[in-house]
Length: 339
Image (tube, rainbow, N blue to C red; front, side):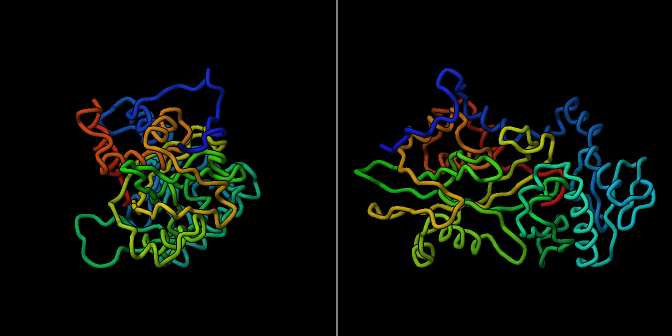
């Protein structure tokens, strides 16, 4: 049994027990276009971000005002930006990746000076690559539009990418999962439980190299063990609107794609934190992980990755989960733009 002495983030009397579908709804909470009323509300609260002829993001209107004001000029004449109020679109100008990235960097730096958004307090000095939508063609490489500071990506509502991995063992015929606790110093979801290894995919990196690097840094899993035993298992996609649960800004749009990996570890191997992002690892039974999920003690994205793991391993089935088909579909959302 794992050591759960510090697992509950709320007092037992206040812990709501959630269904798996509740957990999916908590994370994938951007309205679907079929929900006419809620989707329409988003249209009145936000504007689309366009770049190089493509819709690539969605921006909350208060953030739009900060972007325009940060330029110190009138809204209809911004260096590097064009705002079409009739179409409800903000366009990032510039003819090259470098020009567009520089325009964004200037704007985000100015937003930092205004100290309006908590998300920018966690400046990473890491860049996310933002691509044009692939469309109906899978030929060739995707078009890189610009690079943006990682902590600022959610201000723009652009699709970002990460890599997550669940590590498990078999002990006397019973599956157990290595579950880390995020360091309390983490900017988002400090102290929450997480997937065994997880990290954002930065510019010039791929999913495989990201998960190998993060496995070494966060769990001290050596590269050789990863190349021999880690397996790619698809991707999980969802569209999250932040609600302040982790202390972040409310109302930011976060469409995300997480590439998913599994690794079966030797029973005598124990992951160890290799950096300051993970506090500890606990070897939990499936039942213990299920209990902590239902109590909301995992962050939203890793909750969905864990549910995907349960489906692939036959832990969640059509026989034991009434919302099985809905959950399977919701874990692989098609975005309205990007990706």
